Length: 198
Image (cartoon, rainbow, N blue to C red):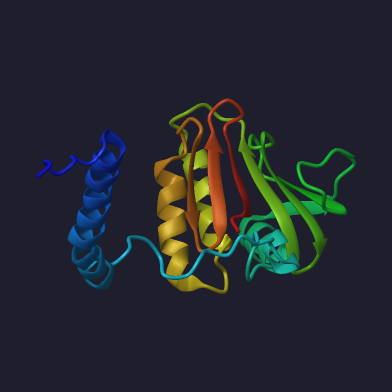
């Protein structure tokens, strides 16, 4: 009786590889299924919108503010300034009109206010310059006055803006955002500016 033939090397390799594949699939299958049903993916469930938010026309202007309330109410009637169209052609914004306001009080000619606007309720830029040295109460009063006047129709924000402007009158390149308005103080020109903060 002859001895049984041993399987060839190729057959042996195929059997080992097959066993490994079957064992891997069957062994990892239940774990993969369990992980699928128990693990929650990180991050938002819906993809974020890729469309940029473009500012609308209303956000080009200082909110709830008119040239009349700023120039006539705050500067002319309350503080005796004289306001009129500026002869300077350059603008800091793209506004159509520029109004310049200067005080009539003796010794304070270095204090002036510029208002750049398209229409009465369309102010794009306000600048207040005080030519007095740092530490001047004139400048502090003027800057705080602007903070208050910017919120003529939103009195709940007026105190906050006035206090910030007064406290930072001698600040160098400082800014804050209050009620949709960006206030910035520059010590080099000793000025405070107001622009829309979209």
